[in-house]
Length: 390
Image (cartoon, rainbow, N blue to C red; front, side, top):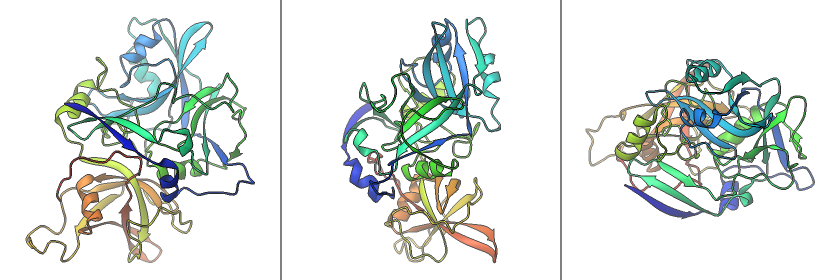
């Protein structure tokens, strides 16, 4: 059964509470970053649209969009942006993907495996195009509707329903710009493909490296690439790909469809990726504190296991409950004491009720150190209709 819910979100002020920094209006409010971890693939030919439509988890559109390639077992291989493009007068598509090595089949070989008799040409276009992100450092909430409609499933999976022109770039860009609004979360900004050697055709302060963009993603609760959405392991709904508009549950046959659609209709989404604050124990911070970067905190190893533990006296009516609830979480991308983590929703609810604490141990300068993990649900998420006890 599917239903639609309408959520009213006053995005601008609440996103600022979420930890996005404001800067003086006397300086440029736009930041931009080239993303060296992303490369570009070109798919062209008369059958290119039909070819891609059979292997990605969203219907191919006439404008740029976010989606994923799945394995036959329904696990994520690559999270991608796809940009329609005209090449020599024929339809073509440019694919923005994570270029770092992983357990997934290299994307060029992966796509060529599905060509068969399709009239398509697949080639690396990374020397021609570079991936950039441009965002407003004072929050881009005004570029998004204050009312978001969602289509929900019994499993807890959801889909955002976008307005027809919501993907379009602002008028400040040249008309021939290849790009889209990054609709994965309010305030994410714009995603662009820029000719190699050029810069975005809009005034922006260029970040020194990808760290600023990683922090920007974390603050908005947006996972990306192999460190957050582990190839051959991650399930798309656990990785928020439904929340970010990367899945179409009514689409016809595509690789990985069976398990994905079955989970949507009859399964239960028990995990989500969400922002976390990382602080050494003991810590005065609580989940009510806003997410604020701390430059003294080092980057901690990704894929670190996070344990949940019941606080003493948290369950006086049931003293026989185990000290540690079942399951663990996983630390993902992190920078300056903020990160993303794949967490069991029942553990997050336990922390929110004051019954659980989440932590992990890590070797530091003074021996083993205990790090407290404080989850923070993004304010743009739809309100959950169900709650599971720990």
